[in-house]
Length: 279
Image (cartoon, rainbow, N blue to C red; front, side, top):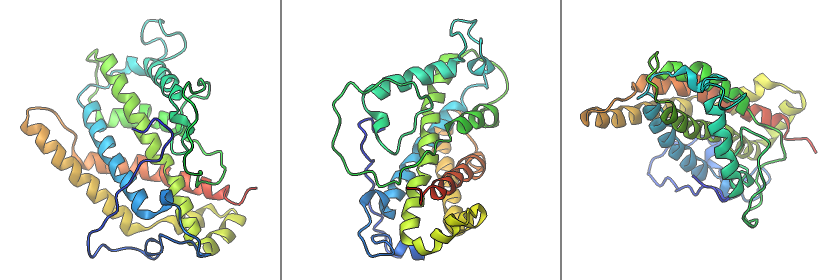
């Protein structure tokens, strides 16, 4: 987790024979020949996303240890002690208030769920210029609804084991990781845009969302991602089962990426690109 408004550092993939698409092979320069900033180079993006896979998979495994525990997500579930907030909303809000004070949300790769956060108590940092175009993309409300209504029931057994605090802590960590992964689509979109500006500009001007989504989709890369997260979940799960702990089925992790991570990430990419030509 990077709280100081810095970009995460990715490591280059130096494996020989690594298959790359046309826009991947041109990763270090845009259509006009300018140098691509490090934050938009494919190797860096891939490193960030692969590390987020680890965070998300382990978070899913941890949450799956507990039952669904509906009171965590219900207003008044804690007996009215939290007023109009659920326990999850309370924990997430307080966590974001704390993180905001140490500059977490000064970074363009972080997006808070709440908009009433305090200013940082630390002095501003001078870091690389934001490589993203000015935009208003934030799908955290959608992510929250998806997480509570669909993802938690998908990975957790029905019932109530009263481990409310443990669940809320894991939920906050997992929600923040999901938000970062999904909103990282803007960096992916900006990288693709700079490589294929002549392709995207007419589609953006025509507001052709379907064509933009088709242009950003690289099917074989998505398939490789689904296979990779499935293998990771199988490996991590096997070790946990050998240690006597519970786990989550690899096919469920794959399904989560297929249904609830990659589709909203592509939605973010499209929404960002539609604003790319705005002044």
